[in-house]
Length: 161
Length: 161
DNA sequence: GCCGAAGCGTTATGAAATAACATAACTAGG
DNA sequence: CCTAGTTATGTTATTTCATAACGCTTCGGC
Image (cartoon, rainbow over all chains, first blue to last red; front, top):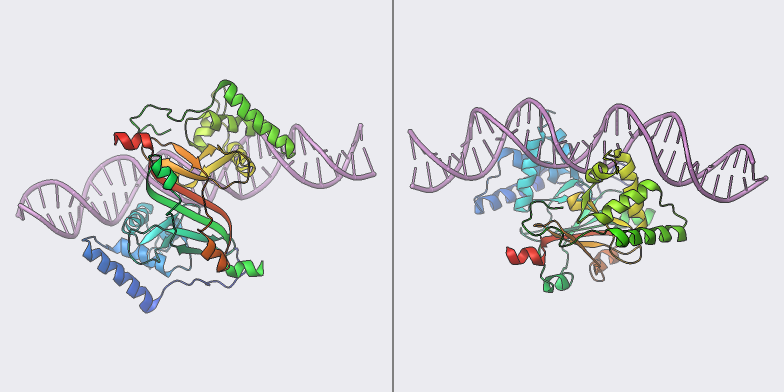
């Protein structure tokens, strides 16, 4: 997470212990329902994302992959990320080249992020595009996916300036 | 531009001749008003963006930079892009790693894009965030900049399916 | 058991962006 | 002027991010 921040690390801590196991189990169950396979590399990358305090870069995941300190090969992680994104278990944040586990219930939703430029935290929220694309769609556009990333200061960092 | 598209190229053609010269002159004038310098590399990169039919990658700009076919050095182009973005003459599209000239009047506006996944065209539009961040801001967030990129099909590509 | 599809390991390479440092060009103050 | 400070450029090298390609393995339906 953003090491350039003066605040206490982990205003947004990652999961551990039972909470982590529960989250992984929920993903597992979701996969079984849809006949998808949460294979070891996919599970491992999901764990790493869930454990993290904030957005992780692909090469952070690569470096952290092996419990013995052995890094993964890049395609291993990129393939797992592709899977996790497809299932809605993770999101890519384009403006950071980084990844976060999904915090919202249910797949298929539209994700959006508030990204703190001070501490690096990325807060997921549910955007409202009800009016946003009305004009585009009536002009013949077919909107399929939307990336919305807002950058600024989170409450904690704003206060301390 | 998207060569993987079956449609006539240039549904969204770039500028040339007088229109190009006018656009560059307008940027020049804008710079003079604000005491900024539209130096040769900056002007050259702006020209290339304006001439293009669609979003250009940084290394497309690097390759096209020299009129004699000589490529630029990467920092030359990246620095020019940084300037053009700062002045509002160009925008970066995060989900494409690509750049477009700004089509809106006046600097300082918020940009958003409709990106066609078939022909690669990127249509700029003025987003409306009036309601979008109300909850975040009342929770103490200070939103500074917003990236909004919608992907789908433009009217032309949608019709032909 | 056989077959096709999906997934993985591995090597190598491609694409995007920046660090660092030296030189040159503007410009405000004397 | 001219000169000190700032802004911009040129250049080399490197870092960071991502994917191509290929062969082997595993899974699940027939």
